[in-house]
Image (tube, rainbow, N blue to C red; front, side, top):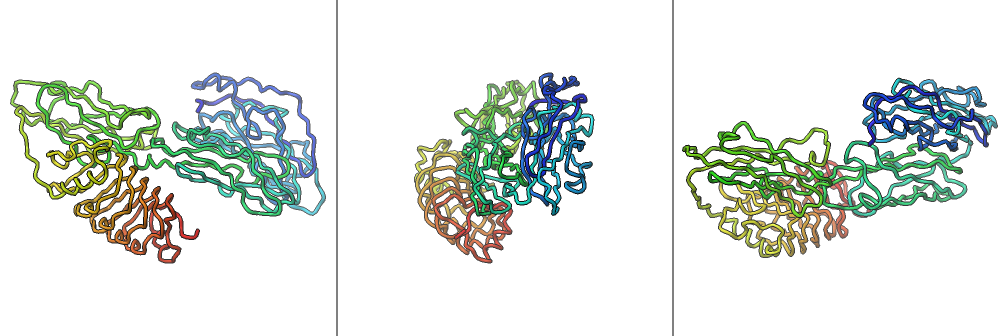
Length: 603
């Protein structure tokens, strides 16, 4: 977005509104705006070109024409070239060249205005001009308006005194066309449709022109067309004669594995002959970034870990502490690492961090970077000194993709003078993990650090354990797991989180998972799982999140799921016919789920 500040005062711009028929209203012949005086903090190129006009082009000198129906509002677009540094308001005045009468043919305009601010996501807004209905044959009457500034910030925008006009033809039987909603939310991946509908059945086909435009807002908020974030649909659609049904505008949204945040673009109905632009004439389309919702960063090799990453190191040498993200960001992001005040080791004498940051980018080969820490060697008996680090917190209002990442726990590094080795206690879950490794081609996993070794299970990649050495978290998302899930997973009786999403798993969902009564989170989405959802999952009484979307599952969700009273998140769309039963009980249950996506059977 271009940087702007305030601007100095300029003269007005004409808008001509015609009531039915074609009217001709002249200007004074001036085609160039007067210069704009630079203000402190404004880019000179922005100040020199700052303008405002009716229509969708702030620099246009062409007449803007549109039709409207009697007895309702006509929404006249006003566009500025740049967003202001502070709130700027524009109003209108009625000129003597009008042939229509204020208060009789159209409503009062004294309080009519549009206001733009530095945080707005759009540079076009609409003035709602009320056209009144009467019994007279007054086709061809005109309303001539001029844009006028309402505050100091608005005075800096150049306004053409002729050329940039609008003629609105008001007809008793004109059909208006509008979007079916002012905003739409779509997920990444696939084809989507939004609709435009006429106010009444037109007597002949209407060709409606469309403009696909970026949303001018903060960094990372504007979606990019041309196949990057989405592929724009047609530049025009046809509304069929004799029907009031909505016409679909189809477009495609790309699916990537990058954290970008929700991104938006604007779709606008362009004014043309044959129809009136109704309300809403513009629609905001928001692309939901699922990766931003799931983004995690943590010390260690498991980005989803919520436990303290602990390591013991000998004095002397350099320790490389792993920092892992669940997804790469859509642009280069640097995370700062801070030293906590609870350390017993002294920064500068016991240790030194040359570069206390880690940087990730969209082209990185892996999702783990390392923080180098120089550990000093001294002659003091200071065995057991600690260094405590954490990743700096995100900004409350995201400024870049890094602010979407949930931060994991701190890391504790303990220095020692004498090397000690602890023998890990045996765990009954070791054989279950071996079964999972063998069933899902563990040798081909992207990450398998310490798997099938004698290391404690808590040091195996993606495995979290409790104080008794039992597995409580298994997070192997996006790790190239292939094959069928083994039934032995049902023996991980202490498991609370199971994240196997974004792999290539096939076969059915094991019914044995239904015995994991302590499970709170089950993510199996984005695999190739098939068959039906087992009714045994209804036994997961503590479950708060269930993701089954983007598989090949089919059939109806089992009625047994109605017992999952704690469920807050449910995704089951994009499958091979998996749907929610169309029953009163299921409808009530789904209504109580905070975040839900998926189709209803037969709908």
